Amino acid sequence: WEDSYVPPIPTTFDECLVEDTATVTAVDAIFGGPVGPESASATCEIICEPAFVLTKECLTTATSAPGDTVEFEVCVENTGNVPLSPVQVSDGTGLNETIDLAVGAEQCYTVSTVVDTCDDEVNVANASASFGDTTLTATDDAVCPVECPPDFEVDKECLSGVVEPGGCGPA
Image (cartoon, rainbow, N blue to C red):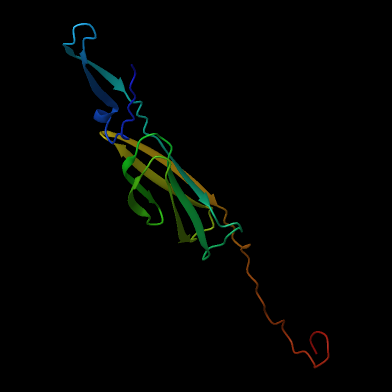
């Protein structure tokens, strides 16, 4: 005789081991008396693999200049087979969130910042996720291109002399 058991999704590594005991009592077919009880136990390991992916990308498609606003998307996805709690997500725009992620869940954030230099706008996202006593970390960055208009000056001055209306040059 075989039995099956579907364990709940573990939330700690201690729950990755499942012990089960079966006890059987029977009636002797020849003499009619009880037989047993007999018990047997087994411990099965559930494969617990916490994992997540952090991605960051520039959503602004045009090249920006100082003073423009650029947008980034930050996403964190639970790619493991156990829930992650807590998951902390932050970046250089001020994003600072703490969430829980079920197996297969994804959370995305759209953030923005104002370009203040002629250098490409590089933004870094950080995340940490926990399963029991295990903490995982990840970092990703994205670049929005920035260009500055050419830097030049225009000077204008009057030439010496007076010019007659409709004339060319000094009178």
